[in-house]
Length: 121
Length: 112
Image (cartoon, rainbow over all chains, first blue to last red; front, side):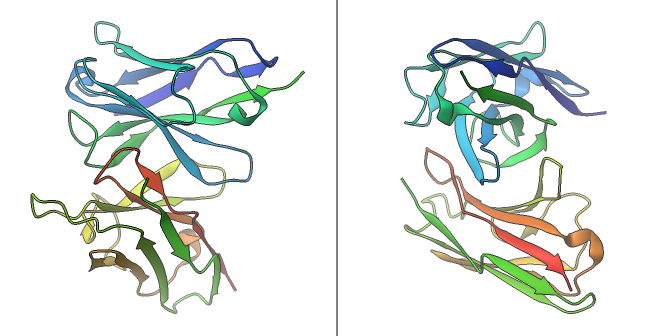
Protein backbone atom coordinates (compact mmCIF):
# COMPACT_ATOMS: atom_id res chain seq x y z
CA UNK A 1 0.00 0.00 0.00
CA UNK A 2 0.99 3.65 -0.31
CA UNK A 3 3.29 4.38 2.59
CA UNK A 4 5.87 6.78 3.97
CA UNK A 5 8.09 5.67 6.82
CA UNK A 6 10.33 8.11 8.65
CA UNK A 7 13.45 7.21 10.60
CA UNK A 8 16.54 8.81 12.07
CA UNK A 9 15.11 10.65 15.04
CA UNK A 10 16.59 10.52 18.50
CA UNK A 11 17.88 12.44 21.48
CA UNK A 12 20.69 14.77 20.48
CA UNK A 13 22.67 17.57 22.05
CA UNK A 14 22.27 21.21 21.01
CA UNK A 15 24.58 22.20 18.20
CA UNK A 16 24.85 18.73 16.72
CA UNK A 17 23.49 17.37 13.44
CA UNK A 18 21.01 14.72 12.45
CA UNK A 19 19.73 13.25 9.19
CA UNK A 20 16.15 12.12 8.94
CA UNK A 21 14.99 9.72 6.25
CA UNK A 22 11.61 9.02 4.75
CA UNK A 23 11.21 5.80 2.78
CA UNK A 24 8.39 5.67 0.28
CA UNK A 25 6.61 2.64 -1.10
CA UNK A 26 3.49 1.74 -3.04
CA UNK A 27 3.56 4.70 -5.43
CA UNK A 28 5.73 6.41 -8.02
CA UNK A 29 7.92 8.39 -5.64
CA UNK A 30 9.65 10.36 -8.40
CA UNK A 31 6.34 11.87 -9.52
CA UNK A 32 5.48 13.74 -6.34
CA UNK A 33 6.61 16.68 -4.32
CA UNK A 34 7.30 15.75 -0.71
CA UNK A 35 7.09 17.96 2.37
CA UNK A 36 8.53 17.88 5.86
CA UNK A 37 6.13 19.07 8.56
CA UNK A 38 6.93 19.13 12.26
CA UNK A 39 4.95 19.26 15.47
CA UNK A 40 6.48 20.40 18.74
CA UNK A 41 5.21 18.66 21.88
CA UNK A 42 1.61 19.69 22.53
CA UNK A 43 1.67 22.19 19.68
CA UNK A 44 0.23 22.50 16.20
CA UNK A 45 1.62 21.68 12.79
CA UNK A 46 4.49 23.67 11.28
CA UNK A 47 5.52 23.33 7.66
CA UNK A 48 9.28 22.93 7.34
CA UNK A 49 10.30 22.31 3.72
CA UNK A 50 9.27 21.04 0.29
CA UNK A 51 11.18 19.41 -2.52
CA UNK A 52 9.73 19.04 -5.99
CA UNK A 53 9.42 15.68 -7.73
CA UNK A 54 12.79 15.95 -9.47
CA UNK A 55 14.68 17.55 -6.61
CA UNK A 56 15.40 20.70 -8.59
CA UNK A 57 13.32 23.05 -6.44
CA UNK A 58 13.41 23.32 -2.68
CA UNK A 59 11.85 25.78 -0.28
CA UNK A 60 12.17 26.23 3.46
CA UNK A 61 10.44 27.89 6.35
CA UNK A 62 12.35 30.92 7.56
CA UNK A 63 12.77 29.25 10.96
CA UNK A 64 14.98 26.52 9.46
CA UNK A 65 16.54 28.19 6.44
CA UNK A 66 20.31 27.83 6.42
CA UNK A 67 20.30 24.96 8.94
CA UNK A 68 18.04 22.38 7.28
CA UNK A 69 18.59 20.78 3.88
CA UNK A 70 15.95 18.73 2.12
CA UNK A 71 17.02 16.25 -0.53
CA UNK A 72 15.79 13.12 -2.24
CA UNK A 73 17.15 10.07 -4.00
CA UNK A 74 14.54 8.92 -6.47
CA UNK A 75 16.53 5.79 -7.26
CA UNK A 76 16.10 4.77 -3.62
CA UNK A 77 12.58 6.16 -3.15
CA UNK A 78 13.88 8.08 -0.17
CA UNK A 79 13.59 11.63 1.12
CA UNK A 80 16.05 13.18 3.54
CA UNK A 81 16.23 16.09 5.93
CA UNK A 82 19.68 17.12 7.09
CA UNK A 83 19.42 19.15 10.27
CA UNK A 84 22.47 21.07 11.46
CA UNK A 85 23.12 23.22 14.52
CA UNK A 86 20.19 21.69 16.35
CA UNK A 87 18.38 23.89 18.87
CA UNK A 88 15.99 23.10 21.68
CA UNK A 89 13.17 24.61 19.60
CA UNK A 90 13.75 21.95 16.92
CA UNK A 91 12.37 19.35 19.34
CA UNK A 92 9.37 17.90 17.56
CA UNK A 93 7.84 15.00 15.72
CA UNK A 94 8.91 15.28 12.09
CA UNK A 95 6.51 14.03 9.44
CA UNK A 96 7.14 13.57 5.76
CA UNK A 97 4.04 14.05 3.66
CA UNK A 98 3.30 13.58 -0.03
CA UNK A 99 1.88 16.46 -2.00
CA UNK A 100 -0.95 15.61 -4.38
CA UNK A 101 1.14 17.15 -7.17
CA UNK A 102 4.67 17.04 -8.48
CA UNK A 103 5.37 20.34 -6.72
CA UNK A 104 3.91 21.89 -3.56
CA UNK A 105 0.50 23.42 -3.92
CA UNK A 106 -2.16 20.74 -3.79
CA UNK A 107 -2.16 19.56 -0.20
CA UNK A 108 -0.65 16.54 1.53
CA UNK A 109 -2.56 13.31 1.04
CA UNK A 110 -0.16 10.72 2.49
CA UNK A 111 1.65 11.17 5.80
CA UNK A 112 4.25 9.09 7.54
CA UNK A 113 3.95 8.06 11.17
CA UNK A 114 6.59 10.60 12.22
CA UNK A 115 10.02 10.42 13.82
CA UNK A 116 10.79 12.18 17.08
CA UNK A 117 13.71 14.53 17.53
CA UNK A 118 14.56 15.67 21.04
CA UNK A 119 17.27 18.27 21.46
CA UNK A 120 18.55 18.28 25.00
CA UNK A 121 21.81 18.60 26.86
CA UNK B 1 3.36 34.96 5.73
CA UNK B 2 -0.34 34.20 5.66
CA UNK B 3 -1.79 33.82 9.15
CA UNK B 4 -4.51 31.21 9.59
CA UNK B 5 -6.81 31.69 12.57
CA UNK B 6 -9.12 28.92 13.74
CA UNK B 7 -12.05 29.20 16.12
CA UNK B 8 -13.10 27.91 18.51
CA UNK B 9 -10.03 26.45 20.19
CA UNK B 10 -12.10 23.54 21.37
CA UNK B 11 -15.55 22.13 20.89
CA UNK B 12 -17.45 19.55 22.92
CA UNK B 13 -20.21 17.91 20.92
CA UNK B 14 -22.94 15.40 21.70
CA UNK B 15 -22.85 12.44 19.32
CA UNK B 16 -25.30 12.92 16.49
CA UNK B 17 -25.23 16.71 16.79
CA UNK B 18 -23.65 19.02 14.25
CA UNK B 19 -20.38 20.89 14.62
CA UNK B 20 -19.05 23.96 12.83
CA UNK B 21 -15.39 24.96 12.74
CA UNK B 22 -14.12 28.28 11.44
CA UNK B 23 -10.88 29.22 9.71
CA UNK B 24 -9.91 32.72 8.62
CA UNK B 25 -6.88 33.71 6.58
CA UNK B 26 -5.05 37.03 6.68
CA UNK B 27 -5.08 37.19 2.88
CA UNK B 28 -7.37 35.89 0.21
CA UNK B 29 -6.68 32.29 -0.77
CA UNK B 30 -8.22 32.75 -4.22
CA UNK B 31 -5.53 32.25 -6.83
CA UNK B 32 -5.49 33.80 -10.29
CA UNK B 33 -6.07 30.30 -11.66
CA UNK B 34 -9.54 30.39 -10.11
CA UNK B 35 -8.82 27.85 -7.39
CA UNK B 36 -8.89 28.54 -3.68
CA UNK B 37 -6.10 26.72 -1.88
CA UNK B 38 -7.62 25.86 1.47
CA UNK B 39 -7.35 22.43 3.07
CA UNK B 40 -8.69 20.73 6.19
CA UNK B 41 -6.86 18.00 8.10
CA UNK B 42 -7.82 15.90 11.09
CA UNK B 43 -5.25 14.62 13.52
CA UNK B 44 -6.76 11.90 15.65
CA UNK B 45 -5.19 11.28 19.05
CA UNK B 46 -1.76 9.72 18.72
CA UNK B 47 -1.92 9.58 14.94
CA UNK B 48 -0.59 11.50 11.95
CA UNK B 49 -2.74 14.14 10.28
CA UNK B 50 -5.08 13.01 7.53
CA UNK B 51 -6.49 15.01 4.65
CA UNK B 52 -10.22 15.63 4.84
CA UNK B 53 -11.00 18.45 2.43
CA UNK B 54 -9.09 20.05 -0.44
CA UNK B 55 -9.78 23.19 -2.45
CA UNK B 56 -12.27 24.42 0.19
CA UNK B 57 -15.05 21.93 -0.41
CA UNK B 58 -13.85 18.71 -2.02
CA UNK B 59 -13.90 15.65 0.19
CA UNK B 60 -10.78 13.53 -0.10
CA UNK B 61 -11.12 9.87 -0.97
CA UNK B 62 -12.82 7.88 1.76
CA UNK B 63 -13.96 10.87 3.80
CA UNK B 64 -17.56 10.43 4.99
CA UNK B 65 -20.14 12.76 3.52
CA UNK B 66 -21.02 14.12 6.97
CA UNK B 67 -17.95 16.33 6.48
CA UNK B 68 -18.40 19.38 4.30
CA UNK B 69 -16.31 22.45 3.61
CA UNK B 70 -17.38 25.85 2.44
CA UNK B 71 -16.24 29.44 2.19
CA UNK B 72 -14.37 31.80 -0.04
CA UNK B 73 -11.69 34.46 0.01
CA UNK B 74 -10.60 34.61 3.62
CA UNK B 75 -13.43 32.91 5.53
CA UNK B 76 -13.91 29.15 5.60
CA UNK B 77 -15.98 26.63 7.50
CA UNK B 78 -15.80 22.90 8.10
CA UNK B 79 -19.08 21.34 9.12
CA UNK B 80 -19.75 17.92 10.53
CA UNK B 81 -23.42 17.18 10.09
CA UNK B 82 -23.65 14.51 12.79
CA UNK B 83 -20.59 14.05 14.97
CA UNK B 84 -19.51 10.50 15.68
CA UNK B 85 -17.10 9.24 18.33
CA UNK B 86 -14.44 8.59 15.68
CA UNK B 87 -14.39 12.29 14.75
CA UNK B 88 -12.51 13.32 17.89
CA UNK B 89 -9.18 14.99 17.40
CA UNK B 90 -7.68 18.26 16.31
CA UNK B 91 -8.78 19.83 13.06
CA UNK B 92 -6.34 22.04 11.17
CA UNK B 93 -6.88 24.29 8.20
CA UNK B 94 -3.96 25.02 5.89
CA UNK B 95 -3.31 27.39 3.01
CA UNK B 96 -1.17 26.64 0.00
CA UNK B 97 -1.67 29.70 -2.15
CA UNK B 98 1.84 30.79 -1.24
CA UNK B 99 4.95 29.59 0.52
CA UNK B 100 5.51 29.15 3.35
CA UNK B 101 2.53 26.88 3.78
CA UNK B 102 0.80 27.80 7.02
CA UNK B 103 -1.58 25.98 9.30
CA UNK B 104 -4.14 27.28 11.70
CA UNK B 105 -3.65 26.62 15.38
CA UNK B 106 -6.26 23.87 15.36
CA UNK B 107 -9.68 23.20 16.84
CA UNK B 108 -9.94 20.31 19.26
CA UNK B 109 -13.17 18.36 18.97
CA UNK B 110 -14.27 16.24 21.90
CA UNK B 111 -17.34 14.13 22.54
CA UNK B 112 -19.65 15.00 25.42
